[in-house]
Image (cartoon, rainbow, N blue to C red):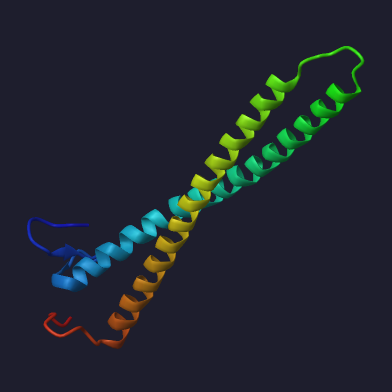
Length: 137
């Protein structure tokens, strides 16, 4: 919880914690609050990417089947426009998949950086070593 103006934070026991330590506690609490949402988002992105791979494979199979049917037909059916539409849809699926993959990779790197920084700050707090110029406990 933040209390009043400035950088004073109130601990769970209701005692004010000032300066960088208070910000660290607040940041750590915020990260712990957001971590489940980030993990859920990551799992949903992963599921969407898997379904898009399946969709792309189905589009490829359908396009191949349409080409085969077109070749086997005695009557000249023009399936080329439909094949082109399928290939265009496949291209869009691949594009969206690439965007999702890039977003998921950025999210993974961000999550890794946050975990690394949290561990570093926790180790500093536990050891009682503070950066130069910061107030002690």
